[in-house]
Length: 138
Figure (cartoon, rainbow, N blue to C red):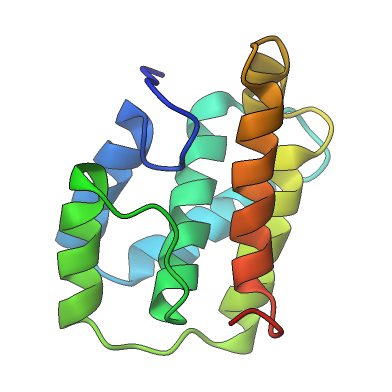
């Protein structure tokens, strides 16, 4: 995973995931969230975690609660603008579960960030995503 920052789309894996979203459409979101869930309590590798966060961020954006907006999110923002779908309750629940899984035990991405000087900043960024997925979020 090539990463240059702590935000969801500041790594190569998330960028590749957006490309797949553009190719496959909304099914990519559900498939990614299901893939994270399928790991269960097993070891979640960093790429799957990055993809799960990208899918969760996409759900938040579909809810009108975007996070990071910059050149790394332009393609996703364009996709969101042309795909006005409302995420189901099940999709929102799956997105929250994916974020929790990435932050939890046996997560390579959490381990990698935990070893860095920016661990707290990364965790705060991901926690912000989780808050934007909750019904109380504005």
